[in-house]
Image (cartoon, rainbow, N blue to C red):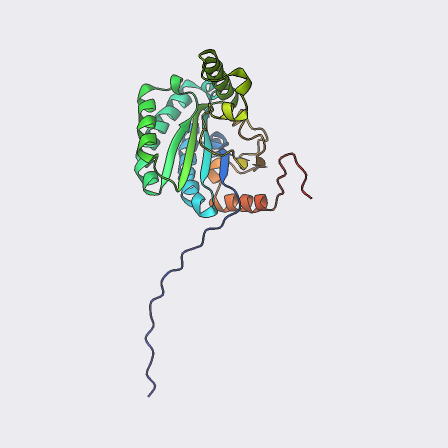
Amino acid sequence: MALQSKKTAKTPVQPEMTDYGVRHVAIIMDGNGRWAKKRGWPRLAGHRKGAEQIKKIVREAPDLGIRYMTIYAFSTENWKRSLIEVLGLMKMFRFMIRREADALSAEGVHLRFIGDRSRLDPALRETMDTIEARTKTNTRLTLAVAINYGGRDELRRAAAQLALDCAEGRIAAEDIDDDALAARLDTVGMPDPDLVIRTSGETRISNFLSWQAAYAEYEFTETLWPDFTVQELTDILARFSSRERRFGGVKT
């Protein structure tokens, strides 16, 4: 009688990281309000659903070769929205940042915030400062959250700092170059975005990373942000990998 061989348990094969050549992805997460309205829900319900999508995208981003991600959470123009929505968003930001900090840190995420913090609630600013300090040594992914951010406002603040540094002798006017300005932007230490994605079908950049995204590739999708999936991100990255980036030059 032939002996039957025993089956041995197989070790699950971990998916390999796929690198599409995108180091830094920036996302304009548009469509939360419309997503909620389609369902007869308040706009804040859409923002909460959108926040859940952020977690899914951030969790998978490093396995797609992404090392930096910047998300547009609240612009300098968003203060024009209703008081209920603005207050609700600020409360949600503080709650989500606190709730997700440990999980993000455990996954190697360095969380940082860009934008003018002077108009934000002191409690929110304190939370942001604390979490930035707690996660600053993480290296798997740097996630920059833009809150009260506007590209023109950032450039104005950087120019004002350059003017002050020049007036006080820390830099000579003739030494002001691209690097000097970039060193005074909110994104100092981060590479410029390779790819900017905007959801919801709008085809404008809405004052987002005006300086940094000068040579970025752009993708505009009809998908509302709460419906944006890791698979759609992967498809966009695959299209990006087939593009030829010349940065104003000519490849022979």
